[in-house]
Length: 530
Image (cartoon, rainbow, N blue to C red; front, side):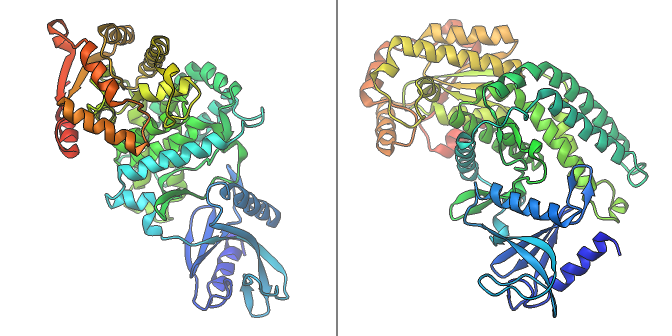
């Protein structure tokens, strides 16, 4: 018998009633290409399959034990209440079993090891929420906060990790393996196979060229401590909504180099999977919210490269995990979806990116409008309120003192916004800058950034009656959850010295009435002609 046969026989024994932790019912089974999960009541037991693949080796009992130990350590960082213990699989007299917690270990040889976890409601996996059309902005905003807090808590990785040349070599190898798989007799000649192979060639060339262009930026971020031991496998099926919050689970345990990566690479997996699920607005919402919470904007130029790399990895996994008879049904859907994302992101852009600058008094809805427009354009939002706090070393929602609002601090904030916008545009990412921009010089400076970058430029003026603005400002202050420190007194001052766009600015200025319910304002943003 082969190792695979032995594993299948072991699973058959463990699925008997009473074999898994003493649970009276038989166990359900879910399998991936590298693991087997036994579902028993409120528990899950994860066994590593005895495979030796190019990217993972679980061929020995010791290696599987080490993988279980590592999975326990890694996942207790983000889901400590779920990941419980590494437990033995025993060859007892009545057949293989996993002893119940607190019960004596039965006599018999050690057959394998399992990772014991608490079971969750898999209907609330982000992948399933997305498939049902139920994944919403509230899920994404919460995910951005949880992911940012996790990333911010991590220490820099040891110097051996994050080398740009090694990373680019790994990306090239993954694409070569994908090309080799597609060229195998199993897939060659199927409808779409030739087009898929051509897409891989396009992606290979782009990944190599863009990777070389980004090598210095990658090294700078590595030197600055932005390579850290992240999750490593943050696709939507490894995220679940539980007790009103997102939980990250099933971190990648088998190769340290795949999780000791630039933090942007960890973020990119979730963003890429949202793109592949047909949810681009949520993908860019996640990117913007994470950037605001971490201040990692200097990593934005790397995002597209990581998105393409992540998509190529998932495309290869889709081929590797396809059932043996899948070729009769054509190329796997996952391959086609992920390869389409990689090809689209690596194709030349049909038009230059936009730089849109908001303009308006406090409470006029600039932040909401900017976020919605950034999602529509497939880009990011830059908030003056957030960048002002980050420059001062403050968390975004901490109230700032008078020193944050001096002319010097204001000039530094706008200079920072201009720099970040220029970096994003250079990477081909559209930008919506959320700022009051009530002085003509501020708008002219941002227009110059767009001109230098060859980007389209618009000023979007948000307006509503002063009493409405005052009420919004008071409500926001009372809530205490936003980065803005604006007060009704500041609003009154703004109204007296604002320099509004005039006739000479008409060609690049758009006006948006925000005195309406939120749903209507958002609809106006979607239909706005730039």
